Structures are given as structure tokens and as C-alpha cells.
Length: 423
Ligand SMILES: *Cc1c(COP(=O)(O)O)cnc(C)c1O
Image 1 (cartoon, rainbow, N blue to C red):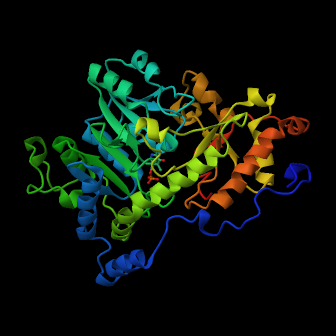
Image 2: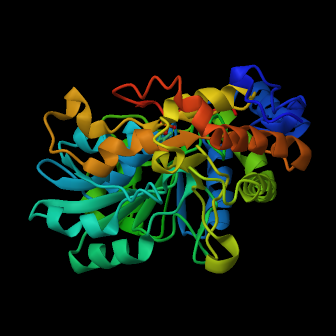
Image 3: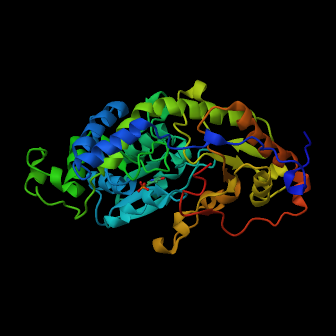
């Protein structure tokens, strides 16, 4: 096959039809039967299916409690309230992330304080935390960003040393591992989205998991009014308020979601194993190619995993390709027939809503050094190798691409994480 770049008139790399290579979620007659059962019984707004799902979820997660939510954003809000976050508090967050991992802090009258990311993991940089802690700092929200676990050991050390609550946002990494232990079990509480674009996809939905009774009961009190009853609550501080939701919000999960969730959860770990096999095969084929690096963990050596590879990314090193912009590189990859979207989430601290903020050099520059890669759901090596070939050709052809390099625009990425969603 010719190595002439498709963007310069050569043959495309990707010739095989993807078929089910990217299809997600995988819906079977079991999912259909579960939803029909809820519909026919008129039980969409009940909680029986949701409570069964919560029980199974807690067992799978390895926590005492699981509490279902209408969406992931609400579960983060519930987790923050559960931790006692309120007016005047500060919560440490990252900036290059989907907004729901930050903005609920403001809903409670608290202030997000931004911490740098590590350019290799794209998660919170543990060495940038301590100098940002003040008397008002109460908690950290740690996101396992784009399915890569955060550097939990040193982050936990800082949290313990300063008496801060740790909230894990597991929206990108349900079922992932850090050194052999499941993500979502390291913090005081974890919250996550289970919406249809995520790797554990049940429809609109979210889940809070914890071993802490006080956090669990406060989360119920905040937004699960029908479960905020004296029978469900042991805390005397909350008992006197039962009946009305403290947050004035309604957080109940829709039972079409919990019905799908029960079915999806049973197949999830096995499907993730295949995703990891597929994604690792893609990167194995690109090992040593200049200019691009995998954003992944060494599973065998660390006991950590990339869960279901949500929002799969690559790291871009333009200095190895004569300064070729990610914009031009990605154009060339797409011309080969493979998806490649430059950038990551736009840094939230640059948005007007959060007011003027000090610069964060790594976060500000990350858009030019990252790209969304195809998100394979099936281990189909022949097809996957075509996608890898598309990336290899673009990197190897860098010299020819530079001639017509328009450079990068001022911002790369999007405030919504759904850019790289389909493939
Ligand atoms: C998707 C997402 C959320 C919010 O979840 P929704 O279900 O969309 O409300 C929160 N945090 C992160 C990191 C996410 O990617």
C-alpha cells in the first residue's frame, strides 16, 4: 500500500467498514425487556427498580451504600452537600474537565479553586495542591480524567494531612482500578455520571457511592425527599428535618434508567475487558511513532486499569514533528478515514462565569498537546490496525504536512466533553 498521505491525494488508510466497532451502549433484548416491564407496570417514577440497582451497584463497587440520581451532575452536588460543603468554603478542582465536576461547588455557595493538571495523566497534579490550601479549604474533587486514574496516593496524603474531604468523580472510569483497588473507593465519597455517552451507559442517570453513613444520609436529605423519612435516617441532626428535601431539588433516578442499568452492569466488566484489549492494541501498534504518545497506564506493571477508556485521548508532542500543529496533524488523520479531534475540555478557569482567574500554564496549553482518538468497543485487530496506520502515516508524513500548516486556533477543545463521543 502506498504511503502517500490521503490529504495529499494518496489512498486512505481506513478501508474496512466499522460495523459494530464503535456501537455503544450495546443493547440486547434483555435491556428491552427490562424497560418494557417498567413501562407496562406504570412504574417509571417508583423507586423499587432503582433500589434493586443500588444494591447491586454497591455490591459491584464494594461500598456500603449506593444512591441513584437523575444525572451525574446531581450526584456531584449531593456528594458535596454530603461532605458538608456550604457558603464560604473552598473546594480544590481541576480546570481541564467537564463543567459538572466544578460548577456544583458554586450551587452550594462555595468557591472552586483551580489546581494544575499533570500533562501525562491529565488529572490533578499532586504537587500543585498544597500551596492553594487556605483556612476555608474543605474538600478536593478528583476526576479520573479520560479514564486515567488520578495520582491517588500523594493526593490522599495531602487530603489527610490537611483534614480535607476527598470526592472522586468516576464519570470517566467506572470499574477502573488503581493499584488493584476499584476507583470510587478511595475518597470519602464518589459520584459519577451514567449518562448514555459514558462507558457505563444507562441513559440519564448518576450514582453516589460511599461507606460513610453521615454522607449518605445527608445526600438523601438533600434531594431524595421520598426517602428522607425517620425510618431511613439515623442522624439526630437530620431527623428534625425529615419530609422536605434540604436542597429544594429532586434527585430521583428515572426507572427506565435503573432498569437498563441493572442489565448493563451485569455485562459491563466483560465488555470493558474487550475495550481495553482493543484500545491497547491500537496503542501497541503505535509504539515508538514520533510525535504521539498513549494516554494510558501499564496494566500489568501497576495493577491499575483504564476502565472503559471513556473520552480516550492521545498526547501530542509537536516538537518531535518539526513543530507541526495538532490542527494540521488531526486533519491529515481524518483524511485517512480515522477520527482525530484536537484538544481536550476547554479550561474552565478561562470562562467569564468563573471571573478573572490566575493563569494555569499547563492547563492553558494542553489543547495543543492532546487529541481524542477513536473509542473502539470491539477487539477487531484488522480494523483497529487500519486506524493505527492512519495515525502512523500522519506522523511519518509530518514534513510534507508542514508546508500547508495553518497553525492552531486560539482555543482548541470544547466546554462539552461530548466531542469525541461517537468514535
Ligand atoms: C458527564 C460528566 C459529569 C456529569 O454527568 P451528567 O450525567 O452529564 O450530569 C460529571 N463529571 C464528569 C467528569 C463528566 O464527564
